[in-house]
Amino acid sequence: MTKIISVNAGSSSLKFKLFEMPTEDVLISGIAERIGLADGIFKIEINGEKKVINIPIPNHKVAVELLMKSLIENNIIKKFDEIEGVGHRVVQGGSHFDKTAVVTPEVEEIVESLCNLAPLHNPANLLCYREFKNVLPTALHTFVFDTAFHQTIEPETYLYPVPYEWYSEHKVRKYGAHGTSHQFVSKRVAEILNKPLEDVNTITCHLGNGASISAIKGGKSINTSMGFTPLGGVMMGTRCGDLDPSVVFYMQQKLGLTPQETDFILNKKSGMLGISGFSSDARDIQDKVDENDERAILTQKIYVNRAINIIGGYFVQLGRLDNIVFTAGIGENDATIRELILKSLEEALGLEIDYELNSKIRGKEIKISKDNSKVAVYIIPTNEELVIAYDTYSLLKK
Ligand code: AMP
Image 1: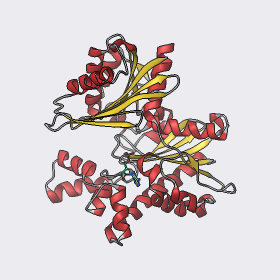
Image 2: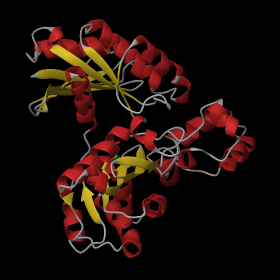
Image 3: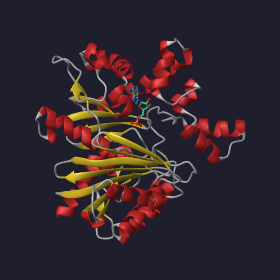
Image 4: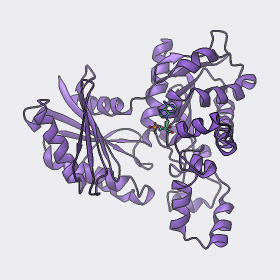
C-alpha cells in the first residue's frame, strides 16, 4: 500500500486528502482556512468523524506543520517518510504541460514564470509545494495542472481574434480550468456505459462556485468555457463569465476605475452576487426565488441562459453528443438549476428527462434521463483529489 497526499492550496486555504493507493481509501481529509488571519480554522475528518480546531495559522508553513502533526497525532502515520507521494494541484500550466509532471527545478521554474497568468493561484501552489518539500524531502512531488486536460484544444478554438503577437509574445489564449474534474467525470461516464473512451462524446458541466463547461470528444477536450483565466465562460458565483470587452473600458471611464479595481469587480462582485445583489450562493438564490424575489429569479434565468448557449455551441462542435454530465456543488446538488437548464435544451437536443428523479437527487451518481432520450444525462460527483492521487501514484510506480 502506498500513501499519497493530494494538496489543493489557495491564497488563504490549504485543502488535503490522504489516500491509501491503489485501494483509494481516504485515511484523513481536511482543510486549513483563513491562513494569514488571526482566527484560523483547521478542520479534519477521519472515518466520518469531524474535528474543528480554532488556531492562528499565520502562513502556509504553519498550515503544513499542523497538517503533518495531525497525521501523527491521529495515528495515521508513525513517521513522515511513510508518505511516498504528494500531488499538488496547480491552476496554470500554460502551454507547457499536457499532463501531470514530477516536480524538478526546471518544472518549478516554469510554474514560477506562469505566475502572472494566475496571480492568485500559482504563487500559493508554489509556496505550498516548497513547504511540503521541506517536510517530505524523500517523497515524490507532482504538479497536477488544471489546464493540462485542455491542451488538446485546437488553435482555432483556443486563439482569440486579437493581434497574433498577443499570443506569440504574451501567451494570450484560452487555457481553461477544472481539467481534472472534466477528465474524471468524462472518463467515469464511459466506464458507466462500459464503452471505450474514444467512442464517447460528452458535455461536462462543472457548476460550482467557479464553473466551466467542456466538450469532450472521445476522451479529449475540444472546447471549454473558461478562457485565458477562470474569469471567462459561464456565469459564476462572483465572476461575470464572458463579456463584451468594451463594457470594461466604458465602465472604467464612467466610474474612474483602475484596472485592478475593475478586475476585482468582475472577479468578486459580479456573477450571481452581482445580479442578485445579495448572494453568490446558489442556495440563497433559490430561497429567494421561492419567495418570488425578482432579482433572484432573473439571476437563475441568466445563469441558465449562459449555460445553454455554451452547451448548444458545443453540441454543434461535437457533431454527435452522447451524454451531458452535471458535477460540482451546483451540478450535483441544485435540482432546480439542472431542471431549468435541461428544460431549455429539451427540444433542441431531444432530451427525455425524469424530472421527478432529478428533483430528489443530491450528490449521487445517477442517470436522470429516460432510456428514449437522444442524449443521456448523468449526475456524477467529481473527485479531483482522486485524479491527483492517481496521477502521482502512477508516476511513483514508473
Ligand atoms: P463548489 O464550488 O463546487 O463547492 O460549489 C459551490 C456552489 O454549490 C454554491 O453556489 C452552493 O450554493 C452550491 N451548493 C452546494 N450544496 C448545494 C445544495 N445542497 N443545493 C444547492 N446548491 C448547492
